Amino acid sequence: MKLGVILHGAKNNRHAQRKEIEAVFSEWSLDIRVTEYDKHAEKIARELCNDTCDAVLVCGGDGSLNQAANGVFSSNNPNTPLAIWPSGTGNDFVKTLEVPQSFQDLKTSIEQSNFKAIDLPCMEWDGRKRVYLNVTDLGLGGCVAYDMMRSKRRLGAFLTYQWLIVKNLVRFKKRSIHFNLDGKNYDARAMNFVVANARYFGSGLGISPESQLTDGLLEVIVIGDLNIFEYLYFVPKVRKCKKLSYHKIQYYSTKKISIETEVPMPIDMDGEFVGFSPLIISIQHSLNVVVRNDREV
Image: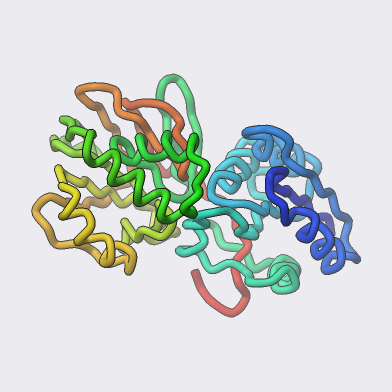
């Protein structure tokens, strides 16, 4: 069998990962590549799929996973299974998806074709088109993603993210948002607008408790004008992935959503700042991922 491997070039543990992968998969044909620049993982994943690898393994965080998923999706072999070895700062997506816990288990799962076809939302905005796996949000979350991109994260991923949320809560103003869910129009004034495929984002915040990766639905969470004290009150519940009953927070489910805003609002996709509204998101595709052989997703 042939395994394509993507290692994050900025991670200090990539050498140890490479040695362990080479030892575990010693009987396989390996094509191991290291990222050298931003978005390089997408190009590598596309090339590995075009080279007809039996599976592509990405070692990294949610950003690397997003790039790899887009590379697989845009390749000539989009059904190639994507294996995940979480080694980023947040690793939010794997809190929803049960992935193998060791390279040996991962090898066994691939050999047994233990793959799961999960929903792959596609977003269109500003003449661009991109798929994602975890969460896209706009407004406050987009501002935080932009700040995280420039932050040195000295406090660690979670505390840095919380600090940037509090910082942006002080200065961010809620905006008028018009959105259409499967043909039905809605209006809201919100500071953050979340369109979730999986349950967690922001280094462990369970924003979307009802998300299922195979139900063909997007979960939409509209967060109104929370103040700092309200936000801090709800953080422990959100960390436990609990649905919140509060008049400033609304939940919806949809297959397709279009969003327009009174002013362009920054967009966060899988933890990365990608641009500004308006946008359209729908589920039209799926992605094969390698899952644990002893549990269902």
